[in-house]
Image 1 (spheres, rainbow, N blue to C red):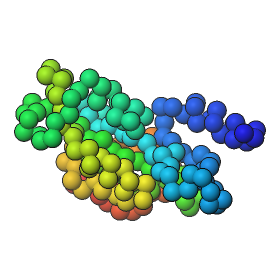
Image 2 (image 1 turned 45 degrees about the vertical axis):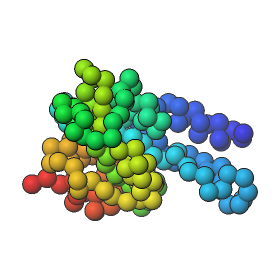
Image 3 (image 1 turned 90 degrees about the vertical axis):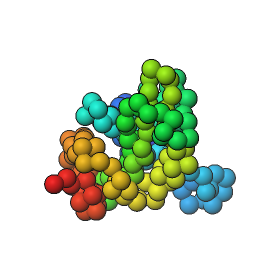
Amino acid sequence: MNESDKQKNEKIKKMSKGFNILSGDSTDGHGGYGVGTLNLNNITPVFVDVDEGTAEVDMGALHARSAVEKGIKFLKTKEEVPNGRPFWLVWVTVEPIKGGPAYVGVTACEMTVDREIRRGYKSLPEHVNHMDKSLKRKIIVSQMDDRSKGILKDFLENFNEGMWERADDQLKQDLTVE
């Protein structure tokens, strides 16, 4: 590993509470081993807690080990968790465009959790597919309720105003609440 890569790795480690942004791609153009693998270097999971009105990054969600998910058995239908607390897991992809990093893919997945009975609801296929769509620069947030859209918009805008300004107009429109 050259000195430049070491510096990038140190920078990424220091950004653990922030967004994953721009790291070297080990499959850069050589066409050999590792080509076609899923690169999660630019995606960041953000949890929107609807009841609390907050949003925060939790990198554990990349492997279903977030603070929200720990200790919870997830069931296949929402009806099995009638008292579940609502959350949105939002996959946010950041890439360089127009002179700097920007939010290029943002997809939201519904989740409910009932800590008292240690049960929750989430659709694993939906979570995986939405992660993939975020990586492919898709914006899928229209299914979110207005309160959650507002929380997410405020979080993304306040986290980095430059990334918000460079983001696609569709994201800004889809998160605008009247």
